[in-house]
Length: 88
Image 1 (cartoon, one colour):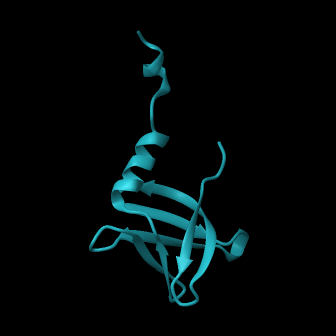
Image 2 (image 1 turned 90 degrees about the vertical axis):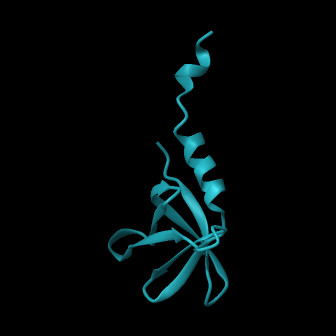
Image 3 (image 1 turned 45 degrees about the vertical axis):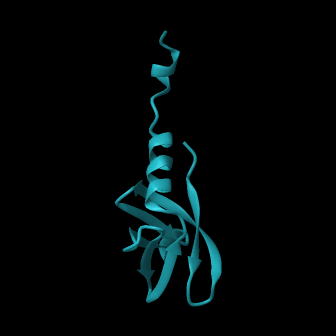
C-alpha cells in the first residue's frame, strides 16, 4: 500500500507543503511532517465553519483546505469494498 500524501498550507509563510497522512477520518486528520527522527506528528481538526482543517505544529498553524464533506467522501472512497461491485 502506498503512502498517502496531502498538501497543507503554513499560514505564517503561506507556503504549501506535502505531508504524509497517518490517519484520516471526517472528525480528525493526523499527519506527519518531515521524515525520520526529525518528524513531527500533528492533529488537524475541522474548523468551526467546516470548510477546512487546522492544527498546530511546533508553534506554527497549518491548514488543510478541504471541507469536512470532501474529506468524508475521500474516506468513503478509500474504504470502498470493491467485492460488492462484482455481484449481480
